[in-house]
Length: 152
Image (cartoon, rainbow, N blue to C red; front, side, top):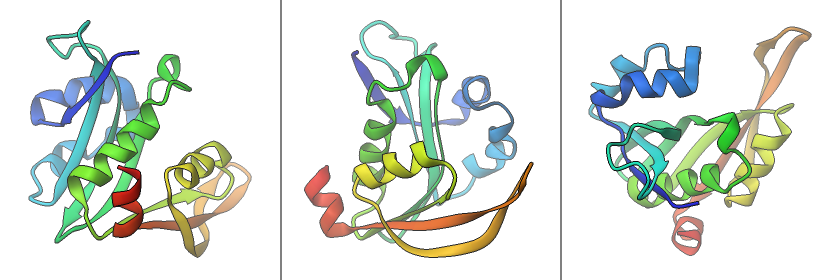
């Protein structure tokens, strides 16, 4: 699949909401932040008007460090390398020292994706997420500048 990534702009908000649903609540405010960092993935040659967003990654970047806050790929576009590409591009464009994220311990697919992208565990936030069955831990992960340079 021919996919391109480009920085997210306020013009992308409706498309972000169509891909991420409720997860994008508050994103309009984030877009106004100086430290906002975000990329959207689109079909390459087949979508010259950027009308068919496949996924996005958003976070914040300050002084060479970045944090991934959310990563979403449309269900019909998954398992095609888009999430991995978004992570790689985010790290390459927005951080040169350290990238951070957190993931729910029970979200095994996301955890494996991040490990495969070079992130390593460095801590746990016990009972951080509220779930239908109680709580779930947040696994804190990071990727150092050396790992970023090697993978990008």
